[in-house]
Picture (cartoon, rainbow, N blue to C red):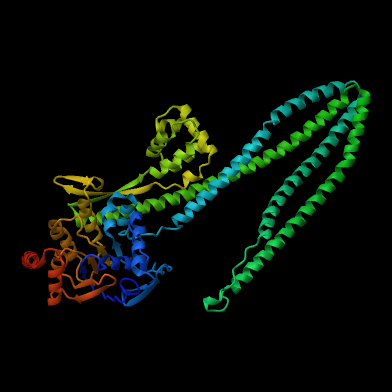
Length: 611
């Protein structure tokens, strides 16, 4: 890495394979080197709490300068440069270093997201879902659910109309009985009555046609309104700025955009032509019905002449038959929507199956990664993946859906989240199965029915798109028992996390002051052993104040950083046994010359005992 500008202006470091150790007094820039590497390569912190501090630190050190990092992967080298407050480079195709700040190591084990990211970094299929990606499946499920909800609302509106059918049929039978009684008194009246019924049938057909045209016109008008809203404020691409240094690279996209807008205008015109044709068709229907209405009026007048009140019955019967014919058309539309709803339900079930398969594969990958780590770290450290164990977000979505239901929704949402998956609760709500819900949650049927009604009214898309994430249990052997990381001290948490991190033998690892909160016994027995097990080709970059790390870790290179108060710089860069390196460690690191002699003696004995 190299730095131009800021506190570390002129710093140029070449890191070697194996262990690289940055030493120096406080304020010489050791942590700054770590944070500048992170900033240049845009490497995410393992905990959200430290992300903001890391970026602020890097920008403060860089001031208005820039940092350059060269990453060698295989036989290729890639150079990345980032200016202060500049955009991050694209490094997604490279295995970037793993970087841990002091606060990352201390807090990582306490945050579920951090524990997952730690274990996920060892997954063989990380980020690779079979078939459709998880994000696309979630979007598809949300879209299908929204469409299903709209269909349900439309069907409910149609059902309220169709409830009239039985009443209409009963009333028509009554009128037909009355009409038969009246018509029996006169053969002529009977003849005219039959003719009137025939004409009413024809008129009903015209009425149905007009009703269908009206609905068609509404559909066209709604679509035209949406198109006109697009035309009213068409999008435009900004002019290519001269400072970009090339000719207009957006010329072709601009042509395509203008063509698209033109097509939208043509589409709007086509819809207007369609509406005009529908209007003309309605006019033709009216012309066809007008003579029938005239004939019907005359027949009713004649029938009224034969029998007192017969005309009123005929008019009422005609109106009822026309309304019944319209409703039977509505029943057909409702049946079509029901078929469409079942098709959407089947498609959504397939997408949910694929989504759950992705999540299951992800969990199995985590189990596989944990098993491999346990083989290396057992018995001191144990890693246990827990399937769908983080229910807090899910319970929160449920609580929001139940708010205002007069139920104790906070308590109830946790009980549901512990027993039923988001998919299961949505299926119970959509089917209205209050008995099954009551059985699963151990509540009475009335409360279950209230839950179903309230969730159905407030929509289910949010629930279906809620993923109950896995959790990772990290445990440390304390005596004869394993203790969860949440109950460990800061030092013990570091004792768990650091060995896991160092199992990344194919990735460069950068750690800022790993010795914080650790005693020398752990550093010697566990940390140093993990460093040596990585081999001489696995790159490590540590900042430290503890001489045990470079000495017992057999550092390939030691960098002594210094500062004049305004700028930091490299005072010395050399191998571990370089006399100046020995002097630097002796003068700068903890314990002074006597401690260094003791460590050197210990290292000699340690090396002999380990072959």
